[in-house]
Length: 512
Image (tube, rainbow, N blue to C red; front, side, top):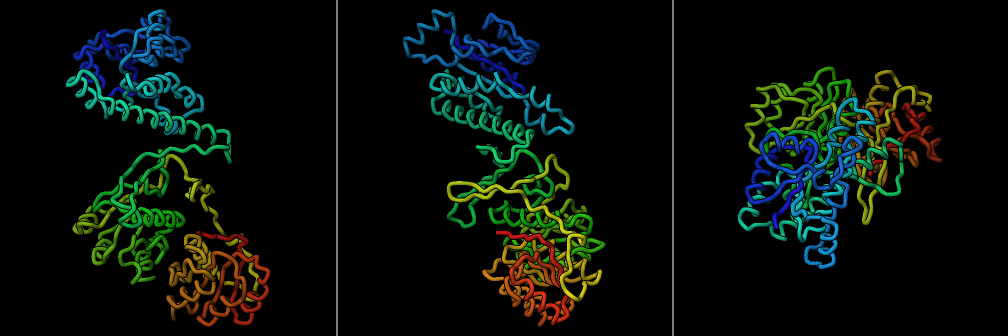
């Protein structure tokens, strides 16, 4: 019996040579709509779907393959006598190969200014149904949903008369991944459209971006997947221009670097990160000055770290960067000569990122054993109007600028977190300590003499006055913290006794 292939694709890349190959191998081709027209224009003889179903395409093409003549031919178990009997009684012929890819739903909702009606029209119904029917019956039916599989399928058919069971199983698994991802994207879109905040099931889909050499440590396997939409300051949409492959830890650190950098739009800013914590941040009226501030903040910890710039890297900066060991340099762009200077180092990763994106990233996902935590990303911005001075001494205008800068920085430091800053530069960072005064001690010791006249930012309230007393010993002039402790008065009293101004924000920034 002559074999049949049903071909109906939105993406017609390499379609003609594939179908011609099937015809040469003795396949009769069935097709639909636009695909049928393209095949006929290429001189390929094929049957229209109506010739198989004996029913016209209706509802503007919404219904054309949803028919027993199609799905009976796909789902029949070939060596089951009762199935064969029913096929004969209903004049249904088997279909041996299905080549289908789906309506471009993702591409539609990626377009600027798309309408909800356009999104709905690009939800494919017949395509996933045919793919799933064929994949379920992969013991007998070859199913192709990816252009990348055309050559292998055609090669096996030409050499062996059919695909192997192993190949059909692999293709079927790909189909179920494809349709699951397709439906997950639709579910995400519809849930967002109706503002569903806590759906009873969480459906998400990611594309493989990179298979990594290993994870956090060499004995751990790892992969890097990305969301389907680009987001601003996102490593997922960043482009690597030079250097060796990113590692798991590189990706974690680079992601943290960009998350910090995006909070400093409006100024020239440079962020240096080590182990997902900032070791130096500088803001200024020009990028070179910002770079010097970030570097001089901690010339030791930046070694082997990651540096990100929110403006184009110049030759002047590149010459200085080239003299130190860095893992990654990120920027929106590099001057041509700057790139040439930096790329002389074989292994350094040079990457560009975009500040513009299709969609804002508004949720954060963290895996826990057997589950996942979901929360909004911490995009809270604190201004002077949000702050309340609770001490006798008021912060100066310059101190207030540094306080707000410090509070912006401390948001990105692992709790317990203390940051010392002055003149738009970090001087000391205390991260991830089990008690707050311990974090303050680390930050103040790092700042040393530079702490005199600087300001201190804390991600959460002071449970007692020990941090204030320690800060005053180092000459800290002003403090910013959320407030809200039952012992706030003790800290306020300590500030007043040491002529330190303190403002409360009413907002904390724990980061675990």
